[in-house]
Length: 134
Image 1 (cartoon, rainbow, N blue to C red):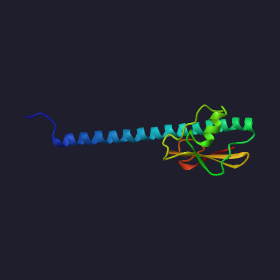
Image 2 (tube, rainbow, N blue to C red):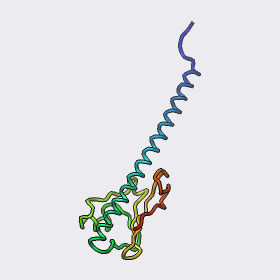
Image 3 (cartoon, rainbow, N blue to C red):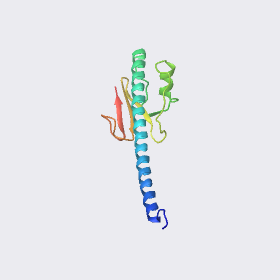
């Protein structure tokens, strides 16, 4: 009598391994997206703090009537860095797919818009409709 596995048994084992690998890949991708979302919220809050310190020193926010993508080398970032209120600003982790944008709507008002890949952050939603204003 021969001992060994039949082709059916081997195919079943390979199918099970394939399903487990795909489940792990999806889980890993979701964790990466949640991590990027956490970084985005932290980046925007740091930018908000820097804008607050700039306002205290200058009695105004950097003016931008049209939306500016925050990249770290844009005019708003340059003003904040040159005034010493922040050491550096990083853009969105997956820029240019997503970007942070800054816009003023008057001398004492600004809005920062940012995107999230998941809905895992409380008070924010998946998509590019998230804003922080003063």
